Each structure stands twice: as structure tokens, then as C-alpha cells.
Amino acid sequence: MRNDTATASAVLALTGGPANVRHVTHCLTRLRLTVADPAAVDEESLRALPGVLGVIGAGTPSLQVVLGPGVVDAVTAEVERQLAAGAGAGGVRAGKDAVETDRGSHPSRTGPPRKGPLAASLRRIANVFVPLIPALIGCGILAGVNGLLTNAGLLPGLTPALAAIASGFMALIAVFVGYRTAQEFGGTPVLGGAVAAVIVHPGVAKVTAFGVHLSPGQGGVLGALAAALLATRIEKWCRGRLPGALDVLLTPTVTVLVAGLATLYGLMYAAGAVATAIGTGANWLLTTTGAFAGLILGGLFLPLVMLGLHQALIPIHTTLIEQQGYTVLLPLLAMAGAGQVGGALAVYVRLRHDTTLRATIRSALPAGLLGVGEPLIYGVSLPLGRPFVTACVGGAAGGGFVGLFAMLGEKVGATAIGPSGWALFPLLTGNQGPAPAIAIYAGGLLTAYAVGFAATLALGFPRGTARDTTPPVTDPTRAGSA
Image (cartoon, rainbow, N blue to C red; front, side):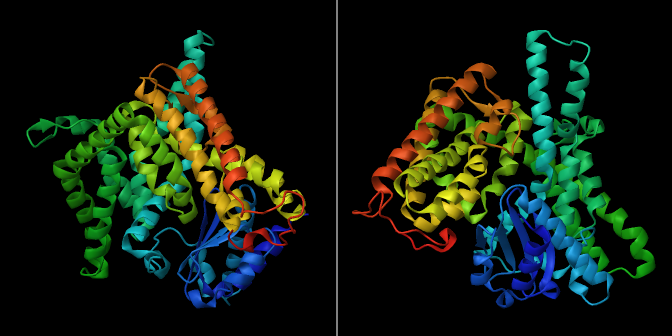
């Protein structure tokens, strides 16, 4: 039986104790810890901990412990509870920092990156958007349901209400992005939200920049991100120069005024141009090189997931959803997880006597079918080595299948981001409607399953590996690469 309290206690102990933990958060599958002293983390023991599927970022302040969906929520809550209890007892100052998120100015927010400044910047931008994913999923599903009801002529009295509920978050997403950006980069969250709110205010239609009238929402989430970053820089500059009495009055005023004017007379126009370029580029890519683009995107997405950089694509997805009503990139990228499922099934068939590994596959497969790939990556394919590569081949084949239809004029898109695999079906639509999009996406999944299975069965094991005599792998998260 799962014991989240024991897991949380063990994770804290193996990461240097509560005093070493500066910040705690999580995504769909990973417990994310910022530690003061990376050398205090016992990586080997952490990897061997029951329930831990993988460890990313060991040796750096940004540590990720892969626990899987569902488990990570409960363990994170327990870690935060234990840290708060330690802080309340007066013995652990770091515990207070770990659960303090209002200002976000503690040292964990600015720790050195794992793979250089670019990777660190991408990871922090991803941190801005990850907490918004539940709302994007919920509103996206409601938008899909509302579309089906509207097309079928059902419940006409309810569809306007559903439309309002589904659209409300997207109409104000710039405010949430501004709030989260300031929070992540060490500013006052509400000031970031206040500056970003300028972007969606109807009054901007009366403002002229570069000879053209602005439009409410112009620049979208990219403009909100830039506006809140600028506001955070201005706020920090003011706080370092104004005495306490003036700081309370002048810092918020100067921050909102200067950042707001810069947003209206520069950032909105520039971000709008970038957003338009993203939409145009995505359409051109699929229309002109769809099959090749699908091969590349579907084949390379698993390494991005492995490195934790896939969340940095969220601003691009969100921009496409704002512009076109759906993102054409997510269905292509989702094929990577399908290739992983096919590869895992081949491992299950080939290594029949490895009961431990087969048990791992059985437990991780449902999550993999729903598009959560980390349990299969860290529990199965990556430790074995070759199956990870052959799973990427399956993802490339599925991406090429979906991309080919885009070249033929049948685009497949998702109205929201977050889920993939089978969980993406309720969110699918396209330029020809949901029915063709669902059929093409299903064909892509089947292609990725089949190619991932076949490639792994043929090439995923060292020559001479027997089906029925392979010795068991006692710890699949630490098995050597083939």
C-alpha cells in the first residue's frame, strides 16, 4: 500500500533535510525541489527509493523527482506539510521559504541553471505556465463539449452559458500570465497582473502605436510575459533606491506607469508581430513540409520531456490557441508518447521472465496511454537504452502520419494543452471540423504504437537477447543501457 507520508519524509531526508529545501512545487508527474546545497542530495539513494521513477537535475539547485501522476500531488502536499510543520516549530527556516510563494524573492528563484542560461530561462518560463494548465484543460474540454452541442443543435439554452464559462479564462489569460511571471521572477505578483491587464482592456483600441490602432488582446500571452518581466525589473530598481516611506507609494505607481506605457507603445505591437509570425510559421511548416515536420517533432519530443524542457512550448501552444482556436503542434508532439507505449509493449513481450520490469510496464502503461510518458521513460525505456531510441522512431512515424494529412489540407489541432494520448480526443478539432481530426489523430496513434513496437522488437535489444531466458532486472530505474 502506498504511503505518501513515508515517501515525503524519505525524499526530504535524502535531499539534505528540510533545512536544505528552499522551494517546492510540482507538475503533472514531477516533484520539483530547489535546494540550497546540491551536494547534500543523495542521488543514488533517491533513485532507489520505492515509488521514485527517476531523478533529474542532481548536482544542481533545481532537482526534479519523477513520481508519476496522482502520486506527485499527494507527496508534494505531504512535503509542504512537513516543511510548514518544521517552520512552525521554529527549527527550520528553510521550510517557511519552501511554502512561501507570494513574493518569490528567496534565493531558490535565482539558482544557477542545470545546462546553461538558456535552459534555465526556458525552465523558468515553463514554471510560469505550468500552474495554468488545469484551467486550460478544463476550459478546453468545455469548449469542445459546447461546440458539439452547438453543431448538433442540442440544449440551446445551455450553450451560451457554456461558451461564457469556457471562454472567460482565455479572455483574461494575459492577467494570469502577468501575475505568475512576476511571482516566478521575484516581483509582486499583483503588479505583474495589473500591467498585463492593460493588454486585454477594451480602452487600448483608442491608443495608436507605430501609426496603427492597437487591438485588445494584441500580443497575447507573449506581451503579458514581456510586460510583467519589465514591471518586475522596474519594481526591483525602485525598491533598491527609495526609502521605506516613499517605497510604499511610489514603487507601485512608477512600476505600473512606466511598464504600462512601455507595454502600450512598444511591447504590444512587438509581441503581436511575434505572435502573428508564430501562427504563420506553424501553418507554413505543416502545409509545406508537414510529413517531414511531423517526423522531426514526433521523434525529438521525448528527449525534451526527459530534460523537462517540453513545458517551454506552452507559450507557443497558447499563442496558437489564442489566434486560431487550436494548436496544430500538440497532436504531432503527442505521437512521441504513443511511440513510447509501443516500445514498452515490445519490451513486455520480449523480456517475459523479467517480472519486475513487466510489473513496472503494467503499472505505467495506463498513464502512458493517457499521454503521461515519464513513468515509461524512467521506469522502462531509458534505463534499457535502445528502447528509448526505438520509441522515438515510433513517435516520428506517428508525427509523420499526422503531418502528411496537414500537407493534404486536413489539419489536426487541440483546443487546449496538457493532456495527450487518449486524453486528447475530447479536445481535438481542425480546419475541417472535429470528426476528421479525431480520425487522423487515431490513425497517428495506431501508427506510432505499431512502429514503436516493431522497431523495439527488431532493434531494441542486443543481438542474442533471448525471449525467455533474459535474467530479471531487479531495479529497472538503474539498469544499464543496452
